[in-house]
Image (cartoon, rainbow, N blue to C red):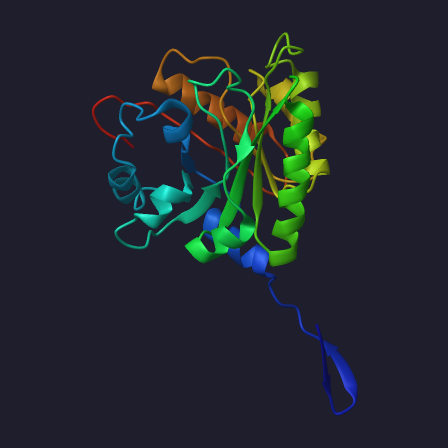
Length: 251
């Protein structure tokens, strides 16, 4: 924005709406996010039967953001201290096509709900891929119009994917999200720091790890996260840990 004073133009450096909202989703360039969008796809998951309780228990313990469906946002009893990403693509495990994610909301709706960003789930490698990529492009355009950050969950998942953790497959899948305009790309961890570094070096936006091959213990998950954050040389180092804990949330 150019400000004219006494006939001399001066440039004012101001944060954009996207940057302001991103600052609520991540802190100091890092993101610790609990995704709780599984209620539509899988029903109540053990430990997440009452998402409101989980949110308020964790908001003072390093959590930076949450991913939840619009119905949960509408029923929050009070504002949260963390950023909110409204998840707007869903399918159910009861469906004959569970990998086919359909839009369940719009960017304007996210703004009305008070969300700080929008989240979409895109599966690459199956017959449903073209439709979901089209959805990503459409929502990306709307997000840019309204200065709303877009997180794209980019997963290699479909009939044409033999190994979803193959570094080349993960890199291609993540790159699709960035190319389509996502501000943050969430994808699978490839299993080791060297191969994952090759993935992130080809992505021009921040990368969030959704997890890698199934870990045996909570310590393995934390080690994976440390490796990813230590080795990935990007301006913004971001992480996501989603722990299924049966009886209580432990931090």
